Image 1 (cartoon, helix red, strand yellow):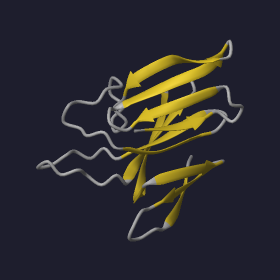
Image 2 (cartoon, one colour):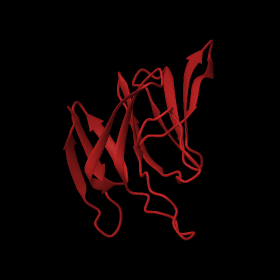
Image 3 (cartoon, one colour):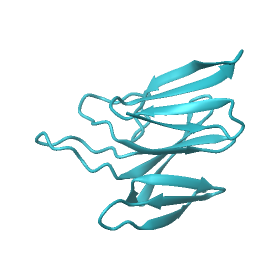
Length: 137
């Protein structure tokens, strides 16, 4: 499955592929949606833009504004064949060209996000079902 966020003007989208550690950036050109940047990602460390086989893919939230795309990533590894929680504490910010801008380590694990200005609202899943607010610098 995949998650996506659209630029507010509707001309670009970013897709976070849940089963593989990749992000895809596309734009509307000549009436068609065309991919212009794809990458395997290493959101936790942002080293060489890639994950190793030791990591599991765990994107769970994505949203966007005019300048940035905000992606939630768990960074958890699969242990003993058990899937890790899909709640995340890593918020990775990309520009619309697909360049990593900043990584935030959130102090609460969340499953989905919504960004308004410099505030991120993150929701947890069952059984808590709480909403937290984080400030971005």
